[in-house]
Length: 400
Image 1 (cartoon, rainbow, N blue to C red):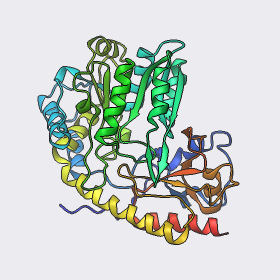
Image 2: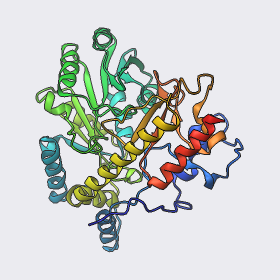
Image 3: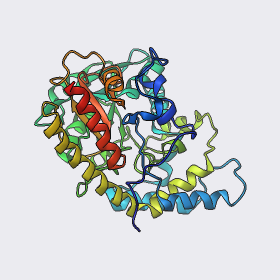
């Protein structure tokens, strides 16, 4: 089947956070700020959802479920659902796990909040690599725990772990957990097996819980392969893996994720504290089952289109904003771009590009955690015509 990733879809009047919720998210301090662009004139390159239609195979599965006419309280009781998930993980990542280890959550972020609250006590701390996704910090703030930042170092455009710093942070008596983003968001680094083995050794020697957020694992550049932390640490009881089809298949609004918890005590606690009593959205169940059982062809086509978008972006920046630091990442649909040499005096890059270019993006330490000053994250998961317009506007705003 041929998929049309060039289609520009009208998302107005759909209660979309991307379209209508950006003011309060990006400009929390002044959500009513006036801009020289109408809201519908902005090119939106900020939040982690795509401007692409959900795969027709998934849409059809949702319609089939709606046509069953009743949308009552639901849970995963269908053995074919588990078979689809297990086959996906086995085929693509050589990842296997017992069915009893799999629990569900309304998303990886809600699960992260719960896991930090469950496993990190008062006065204890969480380690993560920075720049980091903002909700890693928010999960700590929610439960009153501290965050230890281990800054990544950029070498020839690839962000790498400072293992000496990680050793030091892990040895801190207050350190209880490592939140690992694998692959990494926002930099797009795919951790090598050797890097993961070194992280695993440090964590195990210090008895750390590891939360491996692998939500971006399906979104690697064509030809690359994801290594689950579970394959590096096959017998480590304190490893928890978080996965979902939400990023890969543009299903973020379905609010559904798979949490693989090995530790029996924590698995029971996690289930007992589920505020929905185990109920799940029936359409989310149908969508995720279809993604894993029918969605491979669409995902492969998406990855190819994204590869071309990244090539286009790299060539455009090299020609039009040559001082911007950018290398095509190995994973995600985000471009992490360093504008520190281009706009060294700008205190808020999101505000600059919103006002001068009519482009919405995220960046800096106010939206990410540490080590992000002067950088922006651009969502490239959009039709190339939209991407071209956004980049041209950014280049124009920098030139003037």
